[in-house]
Image (cartoon, rainbow, N blue to C red; front, side, top):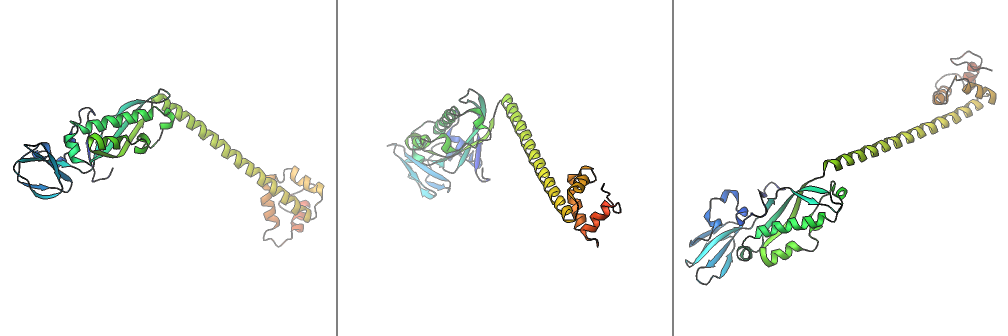
Length: 288
């Protein structure tokens, strides 16, 4: 919700009135509440002035600016800026008969001031009732688990343009945004989702560990193959190589270190290093 967008909390959708649209700083201004007779009228940019002929009943509209209004006309200011109506949380039933609590709000704007003022006794109430009805219908088409973390939009609940039909026929109110501030699932479902998430996490950890172990084994096997090749090149017989590895002087995992020694900065050649190891003169002794 933008910072400059006004908002009102609605205690009950069935009692919301036109006065909910009056800006907070104008609550005491009678020009918003009822028709009054004033010749000089200053209309703010966020308002329209609806004028009614006291004798013929004809209603006309004037836009923002300064106006002279005939004394046989009475007029009323209608706020046409955006206003968000926050409705109380309400329980809805999903397709799989789970009761979920949804915190709903809608952003409205008076688009047809004359219709807003003359067609319906309480247009905001009608808009609110329709919003609840559309949400109820939409939720009833989904299973509860489909609502977890779902971002519900105006297009989701009003695919057939019901708000627009109401706007142009009765209410004169445009609904451009539906806000679902929260969706509360039953505690038992939350626990179930938590258990599923835990099981999924455990499975992911096991998969990662298995991949890591496989990679380590492949690396060790590769190092051992390299070690064997290096020892062959150094002149060791197959029996000596087997003896070197099996007699636990070098485990397979130590292959990388042995290769490093054989290819290190020592002045000795690989053959000399291995020969010293075999003859017992190096850090490693190998049974002949």
